[in-house]
Length: 144
Image (cartoon, rainbow, N blue to C red; front, side, top):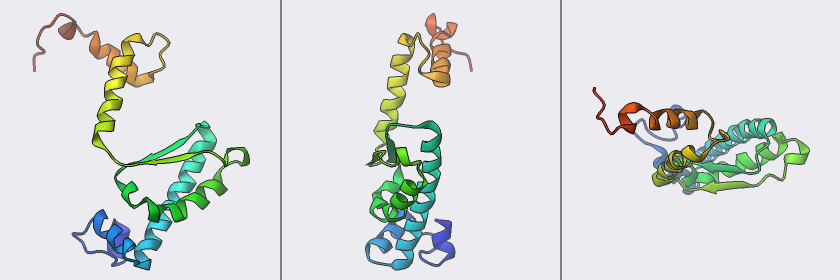
């Protein structure tokens, strides 16, 4: 957003919806800014994908509402930055929904007690510690 303000594409008080609206209306400066941001994101995710070899890349967040503008820079940067055998990795773009974060957190908490192999990692360890605290186990109130 600061780049859009610095370049005079949007005003100081304007936000993402204004920038997206300008790009939607054909403002080439706004479209180029989204494309450049998409390019940077594509290069960064290519590096991550090369390092950890995921089966799919999932893009989500508040900015995906403008994905049609981001994608022009993202796709070429991602594909050219991936190792040849990984260039076919699927990319899923999902809309921002606050309830998905809550569902993910709930699934971690619900799965953790049954995770003997430790697949939930550090977050699972923290959940297990919290679930086994004497104050919770015995039904006592925590003192603050």
